[in-house]
Image 1 (cartoon, rainbow, N blue to C red):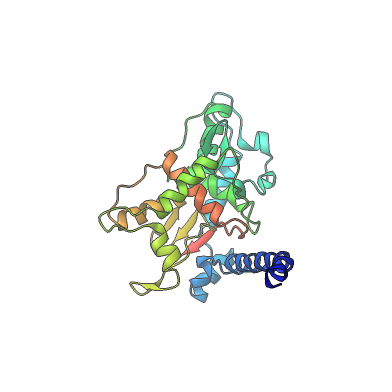
Image 2: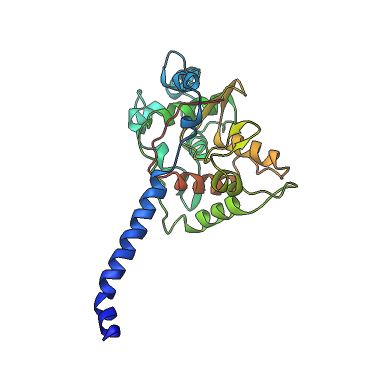
Length: 260
């Protein structure tokens, strides 16, 4: 009797468990937080007000470079994508992604277009020009949800990026996850530890007094734990960036961001 009752109730129990798991998943998703929410009201105002946000200078410089004809082909980015850049809306939300069998970041794609479409030289990582172009393109997607998805094409790269996020590294033997997942919200050196969602890159960091890419920030963290830094533009850096953007999927892009 008891067994038959349990068997009849099993579908209901499965449904309830599934509902609870779904609810837990939604709570976890909703608990994600941009580091914007950890800033002072003054720093938030700096990001929100175009008249105060210093990153807007890079957006303007990027728009100028966007329309500049160069290379052997003597064409501009605008020649293919339009003067305003509005056709780039949503593009930054989908990078890194696999292009022609290779994982590509937004910076890497810009350089790929320069060398293959314009027949111009690639720009150096963290150069003013590459940061300006990347910021201009990413700013076209401001407010749109990050849309990096797990696919059959990026599966191995995503797994590798997840491994980098969770593996301990450096002389301090720490992982990204230990700070930005397990201890997020606690304090380190008087500052709150963010969850590590890359929603606002490239960003203007007041500490740097300039713009910087996500890769620069990741290299700072690696240096902080006394680990060997991934090279700019490396596959490893793209894989870690892919996992972080996938982890932040659905969150709105804030570029151009400001951080302390």
